[in-house]
Length: 401
Image (tube, rainbow, N blue to C red; front, side):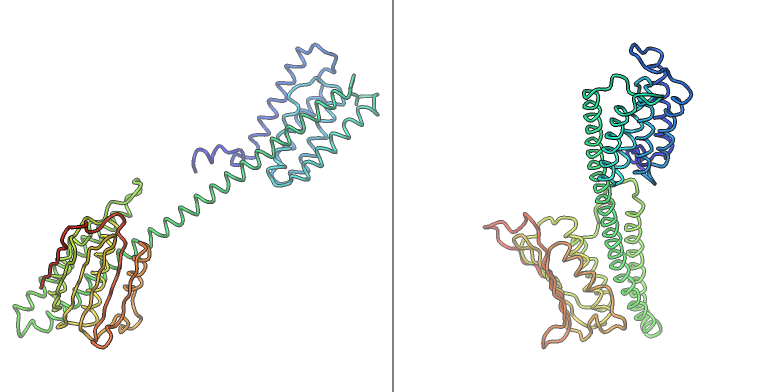
């Protein structure tokens, strides 16, 4: 709980404000009684009882705000009609009015306060004898009291409006925090899926190759086992990196991701180790990419090559094309195999994860079988604000086998 929330009046224990109000009323009225220089009744046992009765009634202000307002009005009226010294006796009435208005009982608060004002003035005029009396009561006194009550009611309305705005701001902040937490969980889940699916798929394929060749061609089996070691090491490193983000509870933002197109050769080498022939082509002059776009591009290529490894199998040829254009990055990964991501029982999260990444960056993606030629094709376009090939600069085309 924050300091601001802890010290809001509504967050305090219910007895705190009545206790403070009672102490102020008793001590302030006692001081006024000792130093009064106008005709008034000195405080006696009933007077002190009335000074305590109002704050005591405030203990129920959260459950019965209108009833408490009526009781406090009655207690304050009795105190005034008996002619006791004026002191901070109105403090409990102020708290009762604010509590009723803040609780949403606005109309009832105005009606009860107005009725109390009328009744008090009527009794002051009609009952000029006995213990209940208002000496020298005039229209001026009534006007002062009416003005004071109107100021309290208006102030209570302002307090209510401010409290509602503060509550709405707290709800908005809480919703924003929940949304950010949900997005962060989704991002981390995507990262873990991409890391584990790619590397474990490679490990699975290489393990099958090693088991098949271990007796007949042990040297090739040794190569497959070395690829398994490298893929498992890579998986452990990336999982540690993702889990490290989860441990950053005292930081405002996670560290920048290390995965990007600069590591494209690693992806290609692992796919080749799994028996896939991979060609790469770069069009345009490469320029630095924002971290989020660089990571998304890397994961899209990674997931596409993972699908080729899992579904098309060894012996197929895949082509990775990366084009740096004006304000956009285009990715195309296709293969000539016969498998497709939908071939596995239960489907998978790879293609939906790619679509979510691209949609979050405002790009487009299309994935599906290649028409007529067989195989599978993934084409994605990612916007890169403020970047592109400079006019007059020749494009750079590179192909790697």
